[in-house]
Amino acid sequence: MITRRKALCLGLGTVAGVSPIGRSLMSKLASGAYLFDSGFRPSPVSSDKPLSERAAAKGLLYGTACRQHNLCSDLNYVRAIARECSILVPEWELKWAASYPPLRPTPDTFNFTLADWMADFAQTHGMQFRGHTLLWHLSLPSWFAETVTAQNAEGYLIKHIQTVVKRYAGRIHSWDVVNEAIELEDGRIDGLRKSPWLDLLGIDYIDLAFRAASEADPKALLVYNDYGLDYDTPEVDKKRQAVLNLLESLKARGTPIHAFGLQGHLGGRNGLSSGRLRTFLSQIASLDLKILVTELDVVGAKLPLPNNLYDRLVAITYEDYLNVVLDEPAVIAVLTWGLSDRYTWLSDFKPRSSNAHVRPLPLDNQFNRKLAWNALARAFDHAPKR
Ligand code: XIL
Image 1: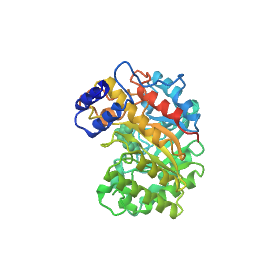
Image 2: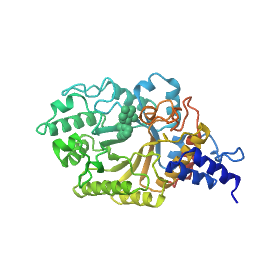
Image 3: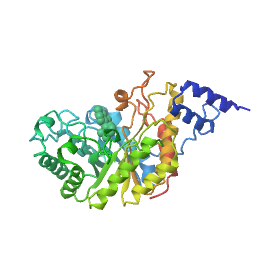
Image 4: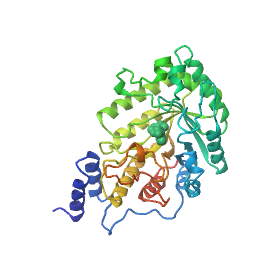
């Protein structure tokens, strides 16, 4: 006998289309995790304690990425961040050339105006501050390709890292020293991405970057950050192994690396299979590395669903994932890649097929708490204490 619940979810399964994420999440819904009839709503957490407090009670930091131009123009956004977060990371301002004015206007100059503003903002609001990212294959300035050569690349790498890291030494919780260095589709045996840095300096660029950062700020937690490691598919298994191989090789050569950044852009093609994710995190922890969830959000572009259902699917995705990840004691922080649907990169990067506004984050575009907020709150409340 198909219960009303099952029928509802099966019906929704067609609404969600044939996408595997729709089906796997629908089966989750059928289990009664989150029902849509008014008779059952996700159990709301007791009290309106902010996410930062709930995280801190378990020895965790919770925060978000944000952009200076949004903070300086939206007081309600500032209030929401100040209420919910205990750490922040500039979404653009510490990349080589993502903001305007860019951090690196010319080969010989730095413009710290926006990055300083962000560091001061964090300090003023009593928040920790993390740096993102010292070396990445993207957000490189237009002068980079015509200026940096195999002969001078090491100098540019060291100059950039030493100058930037020294400036914030003592004010930074952690640095994403190298970002997204693994790309299996580039076909290398070691899985390394054919980034400009690899082309210019060879595989030693990663070790070199960490050593330069460690020399500039011995107190900062130095992180290797990457994505696409959350769901169980053959490709993800291979990428997890390539990341582990990289981390093991860095540790073996004495590279001053202290943590791994799991970006956590969720919404994979398959449902979450906690076993292999737990093992992956445990293997990282066994290398004496801490783990940060650095860019958590839910990419639900292919779910042409009404917002009330969409929000429940997003909430389930967060809670399922964090219930697994936060079981790993080496996890010390969770940052979402944005706090409010008003400001999310996914509006441009992964718009919804239905052209409805994307709704990936804990707060809606009026900074009200959503089911996603409730899911993060529940996950922090249920997490083991560090
Ligand atoms: C993204 C920003 O959010 C966008 O605004 C920008 O256009 C591109 O970069 N992984 C990362 C982040 O490490 O730096 C990226 O941030 C998102 C993917």
